Length: 172
Image 1: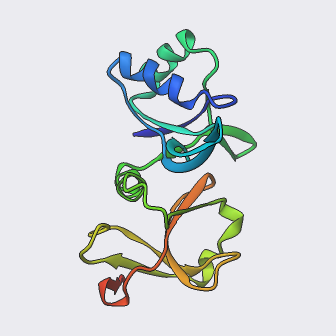
Image 2: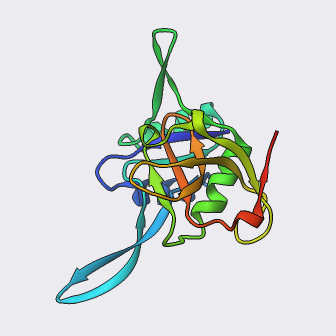
Image 3: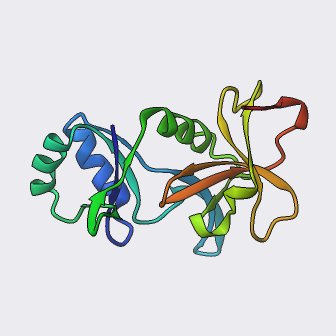
């Protein structure tokens, strides 16, 4: 299972390296960002969503590792008056990773409040870079075209721009 983890102020990659040292699978969504240093513009790979990484392990192992990495915390959601760690199902995480790993310039990372999933239709992409990915076809705030969105409930979503209509199949 995948846990959503928070790392403070741009410490995502440092936390990822520490999890890697313990042979724990970890994923940080990345994108290219143009930065200017000493008058020169360069495109560098940086975390797309600050303070967020995903760790695939058991709760027991993660709890043990957290004692040695005190600045990482569980991302939580309210449930029955308590805050419980956000756990992302493997299949949903695999699809999210498939999309994010392309580092495509047309990917848009959204907050949950930026999309209205009630309007959406579940779709599956057939062929191309995102072959097999399932998501919801919706209009997103600030964009005129509809996009296929893969949502990590309560945390984030990633939207793909300009998916060819002949590659989209409606899922019942």
